[in-house]
Length: 390
Image 1 (tube, rainbow, N blue to C red):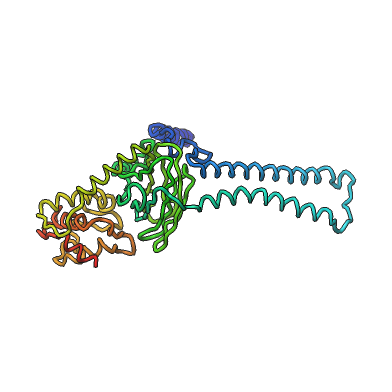
Image 2: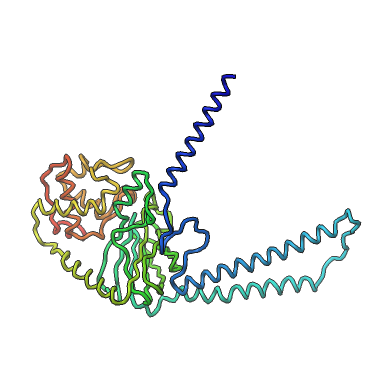
């Protein structure tokens, strides 16, 4: 009899756990994200390009057609089995073949396939037509961020790296999936003009990634050593989201894509602003910096690019090696740490950071060599990074 109260207590305990889990889930309730995922989404993203609209039309046309064929074929089959069963006295037919039936079941499927193939081929050919683009942008996949370089059109010469916002990573580390744009917010979104044909050239620096924005109907692999391309023309302004769609390592979930579509006037204003920023950041690699200035600059570079893995305190985590007290960082031979930053290490676990400028790399190396318990007093100048690149 004593087991009954124990079982009751166990059931109540489980009920309490489920209730707590439900309350926790309710506390993290989110809303639909315009241009991104929706709560309990079952259908494809609302399209904002002509290609995406045609893809959705094809999707539903194929689904309805296949459903009708499925129902018709199995209805006839089950009707035949039920109405002509042996228990009703029916006997199997003894015919060997029927040329008429064979012709029918060859021609009808052929016609159906042609009717499906014609519109699908039209959309597929349109997807691959990247000619006459108004703006051409190279999207380079890195572990785990995107680099964008504006190659042609308005904005030519602009380039930046788009990384998951630090606040989103902090929420993930704390186990608090909060906000409608959880793990989709970036520091520098890709900005494009509305109504213009935008060609996206994809490649990668380390492993295979994939550039995908569902609302635009685009998904293109980014492969190291190869160049692929795709395109879109957004019909309305707004923010649209995607993610790397190729499993690319342990930080795969932290590699979002945020595309901001602006009006022609706003896009022109953005381009002018970005060019002013680039001009202000254009550091002379031959400039000699003081240690204090390099450390201050390096702290910002570290927070934006390194802290996600090595932590703000430099202690690392799991397989990520600590920088605080690291033999490589403390080594008097500065070339060792510079080589790791330029070329990567540990089979890609530590990615290469060639996309950073000479000044940024010099600053972050100087910062790590003179921060936490690392008090080496060593200084790395941008000219040293420039020479190491050769």
